[in-house]
Image (tube, rainbow, N blue to C red; front, side, top):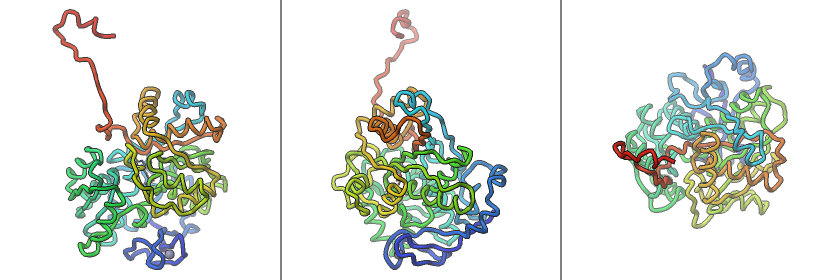
Length: 407
Ligand SMILES: *Cc1c(COP(=O)(O)O)cnc(C)c1O
Ligand SMILES: [Zn+2]
């Protein structure tokens, strides 16, 4: 295992920094830093043939991951998720080439595991003892799990109405859990104001430079799973946007590595009609997305009123010829049931939003129905007990008429 990490580079002002120092946002302009690699040298080792012999976890791409010493890898078996054809739901919405990347199978039930395994591994490598995160729920549970495994102290700050399972997970993993009267950005304010004095490293989305490196592996995986051809369209439920910008970074790296050509998927950002800062900025032709006041949606992962990487998300959508659209909570709930019933896949509400958006994209004619479309099923519906409304019949095994009660 060898990392070809060379330095950190600011995505805005281009300033460069040593990779083996602790950094958050760019010290010069407060924008997002990206890890950079010696891709020429990495391309000699990271070939299609070499990959074919490696285990299917995200660590198979170690040349372009930031962890230098294998002893610092903190893993629970993340990545390597299936790309499932959705033949029945795809036919129902007129997109027969629809596939789901089932990220709900990751440790802690969402793709946040990809980012947080990387952040915690690098925290360990850089000698950090305590980490803190503002989170809508899944990032906190993933961070708490990896911090537990690495033996780091973890502090999590999340909205009061975060789904109960996610609070319970964090507590089980031994994190200090604080509920915040507000949303993720309010939780972020607490972390920002207290991190330095308390000695916490702030692991917020895109403020920490390595989560994006874990998330970019989704881009490598779908290329590999499709025989090194990217799909025509990627549909992605966007909160902080780490996944969308991570995959966009991955595609550029993969071309430099000689793994793919210049063709790119159209990147589609899905948000909720109750919290759509990126969609609004996209429609207005702006590259900054101001805070969305009064954000509300039952999909916590996309209830993100403001994104530090807004310019990167909007850049990826526009450069790719993609688009951005919203769905409603009602569409999320009906689509959750429909995908579960037709496919045996129980999506989280954010994932259901991508499937609902796929239907809308076909109806609007953005999709012709001939494309291969990868919709990101970013989390498992299993985590969302708060959304259950069950009214099931109870049978008495000694009731002689029990058979008549079974429809
Ligand atoms: C965090 C989260 C999202 C949004 O992901 P970003 O990469 O931050 O945009 C979507 N779905 C789920 C299940 C999440 O936990
Ligand atoms: Zn900068």
